[in-house]
Image (tube, rainbow, N blue to C red; front, side, top):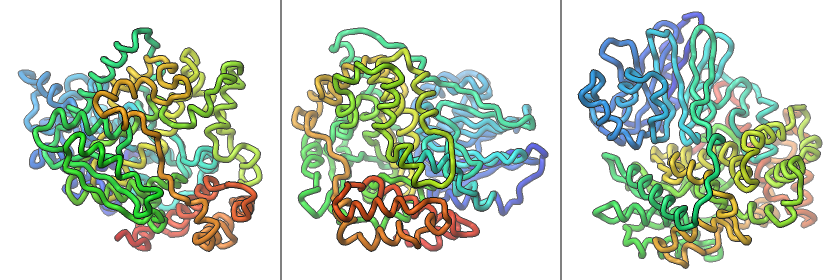
Length: 598
């Protein structure tokens, strides 16, 4: 786990060294152990390193002997041992035990097509002096972030937006990004809240050259075809792949552990880890002092079942004082307050280990959220294709189009266009899998994978996600949706598959989110807090971007007329983001100076 940064100037004009130093410094939390850079005329690639594999031999960039190719990466290549073995006895044999050198040697041998051989999470930058080009590549599902800014002459890239801002300066708000945020409660790729800054989309690589920027999709989940086979066969294949996905993610030269909530996914990952380890798994969980919202007993049940070395900490459920800090590390607003306990459990784990395995991805692959159960009622089958799409779009929208028109003073394209295009890609799939595909393309890289990456990186902790091994992902979308959501039961087949491992009680326990009474607090002790962030003194009200419609939603919430908890959270998050990134001449530096991160 690291950070990558750099630029390519089409005119050959070099960025001053202090600019590159500022980009590197903005990513120091992602890589506190080492940093490196290669600069040539009009371009540079750089890295800040969190050392996990080959501590002594993994300094980046890795450069070929003739100096023609240099590579940096953020992430881990889990099958690097097998890939290095395939290079033995060739002119491209590895000299170190580092997975980043494997990338260099594979590129020397196979060119950019080597990406299809990788099993990992990664954002890679390659300088090819022979082509006079920089190549950027992002992993299949977007576990690792990567952003670009292209002003037509210079293309700047980095693992986090604040690193780009360090050299471009403040960016205007992107109306499209804001519209997307108000629709989804997060900003989905390729959009961002910053004018001119975009995600490199998952499963895509870019070529930066004097001709401009060329994008190529190197992995396409929509190409997966449905398979019909017995439930027993599905279970055998799934558990075999999950087991191997966990096994290869245990490769590390540092202490590691797992997040353990006692839910299906984290319990499954922990149980599979225990199979492959000769010593107890270190597990970490966060609970709340208030017993009404505390779930640590489920984590403790799983910890006892797998004889883990378990550390649990109870905290005050009202942790909104962390919100500005979390927003700063995320670069973008998120109305999802579960980022805050994720930060606390990351902070706890980082006191003991440098890497953890998590259960992220299981809900999006196997229909684990209640929203799927609540939406896919029998009458959905009666809808025609367009009605189904628009109905599901409304189901996942925070503010509908009418509400946005009263809230937002600027005009942007309809967010449904993005959703409709994704539905078109998988119109040959069943409707449950179509809905899950939307979350794979929007929710995961836009929000749910941002959470473990940014909150972990805030404390220099790497998070690995076995459920998002590409082999598991592809298997999940070969599986009929009817086996994921059946008779109103979410994760129907997954629960059957993992029950022998984690026990029936954990496999079939009710799913719970970060369920604290934020909405009640908004009406009582946090009423002044809401006034501050939604009232006339808030950034967007003062800048005349938003109307007072959001404030009126708060007033109706306080009166008990409506429950607008989610909408209020989203607008408060937006104000935190504006305060961090829209009110200072140098946003990242100024924000980090203002915010107390202790």
